Image (cartoon, rainbow, N blue to C red; front, top):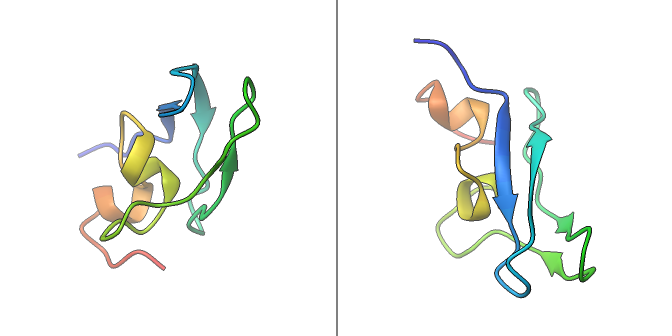
Amino acid sequence: MSIEIKSVIACPECEFSVEEEMPTDACQFFYECKSCKTLLKPLPGDCCVYCSYGTNPCPPIQEDKSCC
């Protein structure tokens, strides 16, 4: 199984979306929307912003490993 390192992250406030490259060695807990500047944080139960707002979960989750 190949690991996707890119994910389209979508802001729940303004619906702006952009493709970003995810870190492979760490979780990303915060992400500032490039459009409205809202600071995104993971939803309860998710380990990072990509698992909450992205089209692909973070690489550790894709590999069935614990995330951070």
